[in-house]
Structures are given as structure tokens and as C-alpha cells.
Amino acid sequence: MLKKKNILILSLGVILGVAVGNCGSVLADKDNQPVSDTLPFEDLRTFTEIFGRIKRDYVEPVSDKKLLEDAIRGMLSGLDPHSAYLVADEYQELKEGTTGQFGGLGIEVTMENGFIKVVSPIDDTPAQKAGLKAGDLIVKLDDKPVKGMSLADAVKTMRGEPGSKILLTVVREGAETPLKFSIARDIIKVKSVKNRLLEKGYGYVRISSFQSGTGDNLTESLAALKKENGGNLKGLVLDLRNNPGGVLDAAVKVSDAFLTSGLIVYTEGRIENSEMRFSAAPDDLIDGAPIVVLINSGSASASEIVAGALQDQKRAIIMGEKSFGKGSVQTILPTTNGAAIKLTTARYFTPSGRSIQAEGIEPDIALARVKLETLDKSDFTPVKEADLSGHLQNNKGKAAGAAATDDKAKDDLEVKDYALSEALNLLKGISIMKTK
Image (cartoon, rainbow, N blue to C red):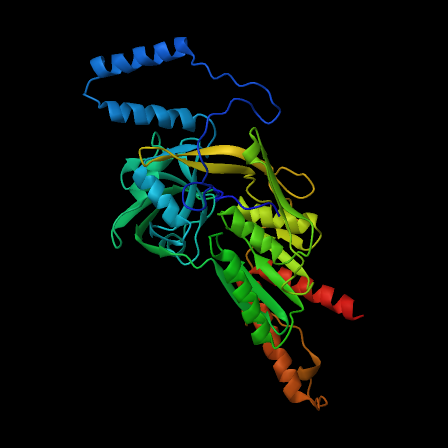
């Protein structure tokens, strides 16, 4: 692995993950092609002319500070959806977001056609509990239309004092009319890694976002699963659904936890310091046990780095839906006034050289979004041997009872989470084939 720089890489939107670097003049790109360092005087003259006309003729007075900040915002927002200007308060909020504690609703958002699009609600936050879903379009904040707002202004509106409420008007695919959600703001404390045993031998780890401590939290979770299981796992489900991404270093650590060698991810940009390569160290925390990674359309950025690395290295089976498709790296460049610019500086690539920008990770096993329901007891049930009068008793009745309990737990899992149930079934199948 290359020597680490003082960086954090941004995921989608405005909440999680940043890359921090130093500003400097660029006189040539990585191919040594000259980059003009002369100022476009004609264009600057036009800018100055328009600036003066606004100052003189606009219906209301506008401060120089506001005009110049808006000009900078426009310059960056015209590049791509992820480049932006962050005033001092916004910069501070962004840094706080990487620690896993911040104020707000608990949703990762981006802009789409002038509206705020929910990339994913964060686990155990007001937004998730209220019922917001990935793909929802927010069209109104209280009574104020979102159309025309910048992403930064919209996020600022959604944040506020804990306990205060905001009304979101949402357009959702499949819903005939807009939906309204009244949500109370709260201090968002995100625990990025959760774990549990699905059943004896099979572990489950859910990563909701990639924060600075996620890699260490994963190590602790895997150790806890082994302890609870009484030994090594037969298989693991790694759940990255609705994970909007976060810091690059965390994505590398998570991937490295399951790999013993080879490339994890690399980045390419126009300038030398935008090129990085990250490789795995020789350790696998679950000793080669099979892995199924669950993804969906809300899995983005750092999630796609992990899924892409494990898929290319043939270390895991990727199951679910095609991922979001964010394959760019944003660098946060602080400015002398305490603000910062968030600038797209590179694209990242999976070990095999795939760029998933606007493409996403294709799952090895695709799963449609379905909802399962348990049949009502009044529905017809086929007659079994045990229902026949005078049937022979099973000498291992207790074991049969235990099996019935396991079957009920499995049925409950299928109803609650079909994709997770399928992942567990796949791991069991792999384990059975290995023993044979």
C-alpha cells in the first residue's frame, strides 16, 4: 500500500466522507501537457461588467460578499453534482459528519433535476423511522419549494435544533400523490457497524456508512461473532444496502479485512497527487469463510469500492440490485477564509480496471424487490404423515421440535428480509458442498 496522505474521500451528497489536501498552482497535468496559467481577461471583463450591473441595477441591494460567494458556488456546481463551495459552517458540519455524530434528519442526499434526491436514509435515524426511502424526491421543505435551491441551502434548511420539526413533501415512484413526512430533528449518532448471528455458524454484519472508525469497528464485530459462535464462522453476510459511502480509508480497511493480497482500489486524475493505489495486507479475519455481499441502488461510493474489490478478487458473491454508480473522488481544499471547496479530482477503479462511474456494480446474483407474506392459517394446508390417525411416533421428538423452531425462525427471516434469507441460503449451500 502506498504511504497514506492526509486525506478522506467524499461519498455522495453532503454528509459523509471528505478528502483533505493542499491547494497549489498546477502548471502541467499528469501527461505533462501544459495548462495555461494566464487569466482570460475578456471573460473576466464580462464578469466584472455583470457584477457591476447587479450592484447598480438589481431591485434590492446585494453585498459584495454574497455576490462573490454565489459566483463561486455557481462555478463549482456547473462542474458536476458533487463539486461545491462550503462556507465555514458547512465545512465544519462536513468534518463533523465523518466522526459519526451530527445534527439533522439522518439522510444522505444529492441533487437531481433541481430536486433533492434521497440516496439513502441512515439506520436508526429520524428519517428512517419516519419511512423515507432511497430514491424519494423531496420537492418541498415545509412550505418552501426545493426547485431553485442549492444542495447546501436545502441541507441547511433540513438541519436545526434537536426536537424541532420539519415537513417534507416527497414524490415517490409508484405513489399516486405526493407523500408528507413530519420529522423531528435529532442529534444523529451513527453506529456504522452492527452484527449478529443469523444462526449457528453464520454471521451478519451491517455497515450503514463508512466513517473514520468503521474499519476498527468491523474488526471488533467479527471478533464478537466468532466468540458468540464458539469458533470460526462457516459464512458471512456483509450488508451494504443503502450505504451512501464515506471515507476511502474505511472502505480500504473493510476490503482488506477479507483479502490476503492484491489490489483493492486505485484512483486516476489529471495531476500526480490524485493517483493512489491501495493493496491488501496478508490477513483474512474470517479465515477464508465464504461471503455474500448485499447491495442495492442506494449502495454508493465507498460501498461500491468494497463490493467491486471483493467481486474482482473473487472473494465474495455480490447479491441484490445494481448499485448507485458513483465512481468519482472529491477532495476538500481549505481556503484562507475558513471555507473550503469540494472538488472532484479523480475517478476510482476496481482491481480489474473497471470504472463504475454512472454504471454501478452489477450483482453476481440479481434479486428483484419483493415482499413476502406468511399465508393465513385458514388457508389450505396439505395433509402430512403426522396428521394421519395412528401414525408412528418419532423417537427423536425433541430434535424434531427444535427443527420446527429453526424452520419458524427461517420463515420469519424470509418474510422480514427476503434478500438476507437468500444470502443465508446461498452460504448454507456453499458450506454443504464444501463438506461433501
